[in-house]
Length: 143
Image 1 (cartoon, one colour):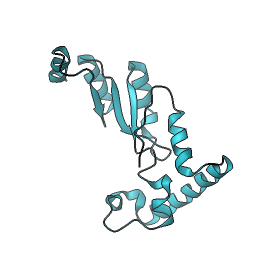
Image 2: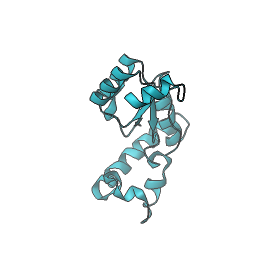
Image 3: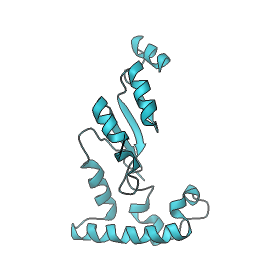
Image 4: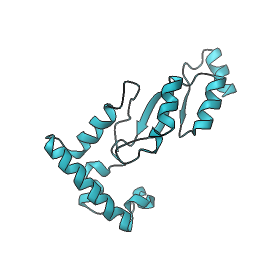
């Protein structure tokens, strides 16, 4: 952070962001120089950051940049309607394996019913949900 702060002071960069940082790292880094944004996975499916990270970012004025708002493609239907291709990196994700995959298909179909009631697709519902989380949230659209 000290080196990044120097780059800001030299005018070589304007903002500093973090990716996949713990609450402790965020606090320590922000003491050295204000953090502008934090990039983390956040979706209907991945919500662990809501307990500590989101409140901390909001307390410190740090913007939130969620990646994989479609649950790594899950809410797009790719991994539900068909099986995950053998060469896909998703095969290393426990959510796409065995019993977990079967349980997550059930979750997908429940989300599908909610989406149907709102006359949209599960992917549109997932994106609408993340966009509704606050003005400090700017998701990276995509899987």
